[in-house]
Length: 285
View 1 (tube, rainbow, N blue to C red):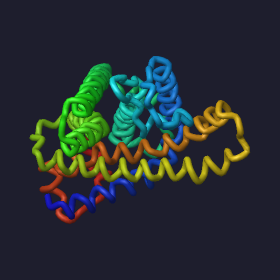
View 2: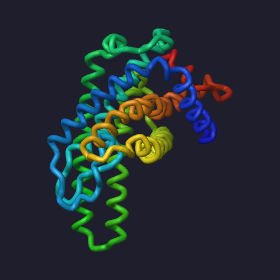
View 3: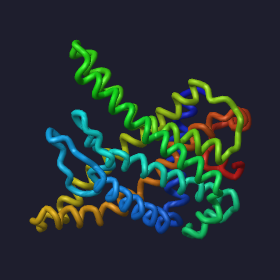
């Protein structure tokens, strides 16, 4: 598949997912987000922070796109984004099951999740979550090593940036592959080109999500919360306002994580002819 065709179909999938499923998924994405926030709060309670850390912890939203591990201290709360992707994966299986059974036009609830989520699928995602957590810690240790054990500043800067980048995208890629295996049950080969296209889709949406996330916090939440003076109150109110903001990202990550591997399936390429909206292929899951 040519890159231009892939990019067209992938961008179409983002638009189609939000257009078709935004209303039906509001309730379930908010529910998953609240659970995710509770998990982030628990991870925060378990976290230690290096004394040199400079990043401000304004609200629970701070832990979704910022990393707080520094020096030789690993902050467990850095796994908040990985836990969020785990819940996106649970949501994705629910949505795929609803589309397959032609109930995607109904409002999705936890009842649909209980029907869609099989025990072996949940165990698979939990194993992926554990692997991603171990990988995150290993990459932090590698980042720390290059911070202290490398004489060349250029090598240090490059390797530290690379490790930080991998901490963001390795969990996304791992969950994407797991979702593809669960949803399609397909044994087609994962080539370097397909993984590259997956990475590009994840990078595109993750960057858009980050910019949208920060714009909302600075320009919208900042305006709403201007009268709030106490830091504790600001922390609470921004966390509450952040629930629908985080919930709005579920569909985008769903399209970014699953559609690249569906689009690049050999059977999809052969049947496609002209570029088509990838969401239509969900009837074949």
